Length: 88
Image (cartoon, rainbow, N blue to C red):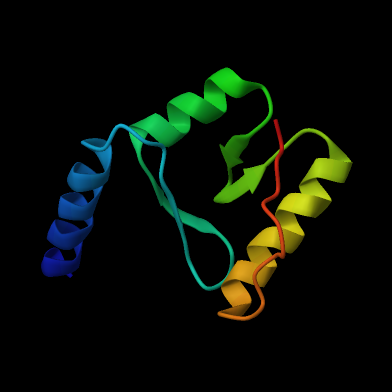
């Protein structure tokens, strides 16, 4: 257990050192790790937020697009959305 905690701390440190916002999702679609930049971008955007382990947007239509895109990516190769999903 201590080794897993050290590993998670190491991953967190590496991600926090990166200037780009990065969110790591588990197989269930929940955010399991987000770096400081991701939290900063989400907090300042008014479009995205990380809440309760989910990446969310206050607009229901955009949330549906976000959910479909995430589900497609989690389904694996060949299931990714055909085009980028722009939420801003």
